[in-house]
Structure formats: structure tokens, C-alpha cells
Image (cartoon, rainbow, N blue to C red; front, side, top):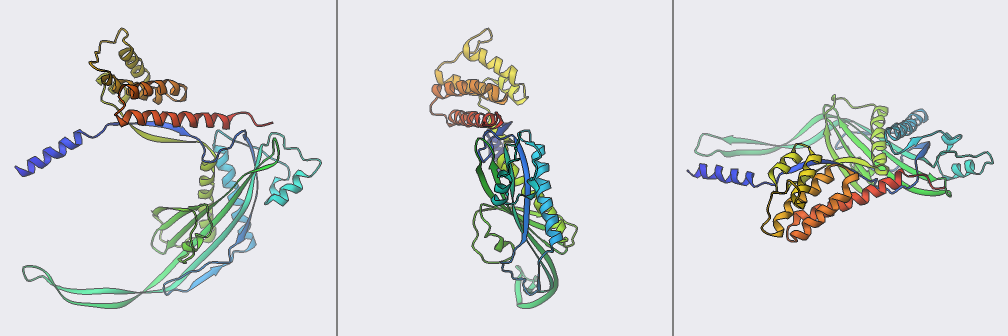
Length: 391
């Protein structure tokens, strides 16, 4: 009986869970950039990092200073990955600019702009920068203490007989790589100015027979010390993505940096471009037919029906005994408009506002109004970004 009662409670709780619908929305870029459409990509100067700390837990660390040929290959990869990622976005067009390949810093840009023959044409902004690389390998023996226990299971309850610690030695091989990329964006018109300078830190560690553990640090470069087991102060925000399956072998340096440069380009372009994401939005407990239409993705039909119901048209047969009873249908009307995209956001604002006015106590209705206000603001920012360049 007790078990059946527990099951009944679980079913009841599950039945009370709020039902949601999935909506796709486009959010503006994290970095506000207005009037920039044509983008050229300059060079990225690669350098070895000289300062780090590491503890190989008994193994011997081998510090690698990558030769110039590999540094050039890495810098070319950083540039090509950025070009490829920019070309995928509908918000920027990638264009050529004479002499752009030689620009790695502001001095190089000043030399280009100072030439009488300099003509940016349709290029609104130039992106260039620097990158720093670090690569470590450990190949030796790892020593660690292991606790060994002997248990007696013959009695009513198992009990430990002896416990001892032993030093275990095992082969140990690992590789760590870090790529720091500093992106500088400079606008050409209406005047020459730095739009922003941003840094991303991409790192990975792979053990022999294990997996890749990767992390991203934004806003600071001192966190690279921790990527190699050091104790340096870490700045910025670090996001660990977890462990990725691997083939069980330590990667070559160029393989590691090829992967990291791709991740760096993804992180950077996501920062400067609007992105489409999926959100879960709760459906109010209103008109059942309209709710089913929203769940089925028939947003136009749902909005038509809900408008008739709430405004008393030919289908307005639903009677509301008090004003707050209309609020769920008004909220779902706003949801149906919101789901139809930016062209209907203004209609959604009006519907959500009426729902809040009808029932000021319900947090759900206020959250709908707040959400659509943010989406409408974001849409305006996106339109500004897509607008004509500043002359």
C-alpha cells in the first residue's frame, strides 16, 4: 500500500509539471558592432611562450620551442579558420585588401593606411592579431600511493582486516598544448578607430590511452599556467567542456594546434555575430485547442483563434467570469506571436502586456513580457548591425 501511495504521489507531481514549447530565437552579438559588413583579415604573428610552470608527477617534462616553420603553419591556421568561420555568417562579407597579409599590429596598419595608394573600397574593418603557443610533453614514470585493504565477509557484516599503503609505479605519457589568440578589429570609416581587442585561450591535455580534456578561458592570459599544472593566478572565465574520446595516442603539436585554432575562431565569431539559439517557453493553462495548436507548431492558426477568443469575434464563445481568467489566453496569444518571429514581436508585446494587466500576480505573464522586450531590443541591434556602413 505504501508503495502504491508513493507511485501515486510521483504521478501527481509529474502531472503538475509546467509544459513547455521550444522556440528558436536569434540573439545579437555579445560585442556591439554597427555598420560593419565588409571585413578583411590580416596576419597573425605566432610566438613561443617562455613562462610557465609544470609538475609532471614524477615524469620528465620536455619543453618544446616550436620552430619557425611550425609557428607559421599555426598562424596560417588561425587566419584561415577565422576566414572560413566569417564566410559562414550571413552578417559579414569577407573581402580582400591589398597589403593586408603583412599587418600584425597597429604599426603595420599605420604603414598601410599612410600610403597614398591606400583605398579600403568596400572594406569596413580589418581583423588581425597575434598568437602565442605552448606545448609540453611528459614521458616517464608516474608514482602514486595506493591503499590496499583486506576484508572479512564471513560474519554478519563485512569488516576490514588489514589496510596498507603501497607505492605503485606506472608508465606515464601526456601532452599539453595551449593557444592564446589576440584579435584586434579596426574600423576604417567614418574614421580610423579600434573597435575592440579580445583574447581567447584554448587549451587541451591528452594522456596516453586517455581522452582530451579541453578548456576555454576568456578575458585573460595568465590562466595558461593552470593549463600546465602550475599555480599561477587565473584571470577571466574558464569553461571546461569535459573529456572527449580519443584514439589513445598523444597528438603531434601541429595536430593539437589545428584543433585549437578552429575552436578559437568559433569562440571569436560567436562573440561578434548574432547567433540562433533554442529556448524553452512555458505554455499557460488556457484554451485547450489553442494550446494544442501551439504544441503542434501551428502558430498562425493559434494566434488567429486566440485573437478571436480574447476579442469576442465569431469564435469568441468563451466566457470569462473575471478579468484574470482571460490572462492565460492573452499570454498564449503573445506566445503564438513570439513564435512567428521578429515581424510579430510588437503584437506579442501588446498581448503579454494585456495578460499582465489582467493578472498582475502571475509571474509567468510578467516573464513573457520581459522576454519579448529583450528579444525586441536584440532584433533592433541586429538590424543596426546589418544596416549600411557608416560613411
